[in-house]
Length: 104
Image (tube, rainbow, N blue to C red; front, side, top):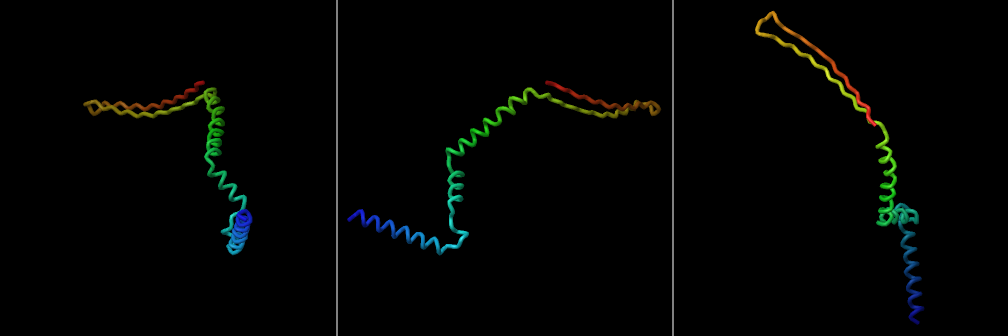
């Protein structure tokens, strides 16, 4: 008797749930794909696996970075004007400097 009662209760709840879902607009219904996507996005084990996968993908570029050359460049421009106490003695000097370093 208890088994029949629980079966009847389950059937009535299921049918009431379907009737309730039919009254909702299409935008508020949940489909199986959205439930699956939400479960995948909120699963801690899958998030840890994604983070581990991303970390393992970075191993090769980091190892390769030590083998690539490093190029650095610099430039400097100077202007110097010197006046001594006498008005007729003035020295002007300008210079440019460039440098580039390539290291492996």
